Amino acid sequence: MHKTFTLLALIAGTVWPGAGSGQMWCPPGAEWTHGYHAVDWSNGITHEGTMVARYAGDTVVGGQVAQRIEQDVYYEVVGADGQHHAPWPTAHTRTADGVVWWWNGEDQQYDTLIWFGAVPGDRWTVPVQGDPDLSYHVTDTATVLMQGVELRRLAVSLIYSGGEEPWLYVTDTLYERIGSSSYPALWPPHPFLDVLIISFRCYRDDGMAYTAPDVSDCAFDVGVDEAFSRDRPVLAPNPGRDHVRLLADGPHTITFTDMAGRTVLHARTDGRGQVDVSALPPGMYVYTIADMYGAVNVHGCWVKE
Image (cartoon, rainbow, N blue to C red; front, side, top):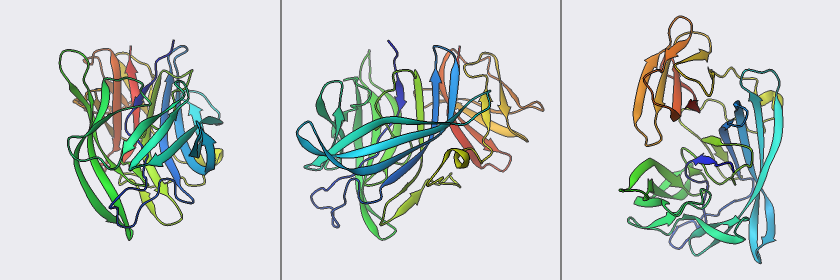
């Protein structure tokens, strides 16, 4: 059976007591754009591209009125020509009592996706991962003003409590409407993908818009051609072993982070675009690629065999 690792956090918002303007989850026009990286370990194929999620109206799921969120992926296969478009499984959410609930189709129940009424010290299990030992811990709360809209903000840590002692996966900030400022995990696991990394790029609705600080192109209304009209650095081979090559023009710096959030390698590409990764133990790593000016070009996931 395939196991999907989804890195990390959520897109979420809701009506909650004391919110001032009473923010909505899925207001009219809500749309999220994310970078997309996936690996199928059964054949070693890596996908790179863009994922777009859109609020598509309300429906009834599990006897409750739910928001239907339709999703599409625009991607290319690393090392091969051609551009592809594929629908992703539709997600369903509902809101009640300061909580955004996610419909777990496998268990036929609603699980807590995000708790905007939480206070520091509160926690909830991450539903999409399906691991009772993996949970969000709230460390701080606040209200922020963004483009004239008052939004609830939660600072959280994702912590795994299994094993001999708890350890930290990542820290994140969750906003109403916008959700995670780093990594969403709303999407159900895909049956054919073993590794899935989705990095937040942009959010918009009929009342506001937000772009991540390191993103220059939101790719809103993205189509297949538009999604791949930009030059994007690609790390290959993936999976790989002792050396990787960056398929991009000019010198770049690559930072590798392990799944505990520790930086384990920070290296500049040589004249052939290569980086020696022989010192890294086998496993999965998140990488960040920056150009000679320090601008971040892309995030992704790399697996060492």
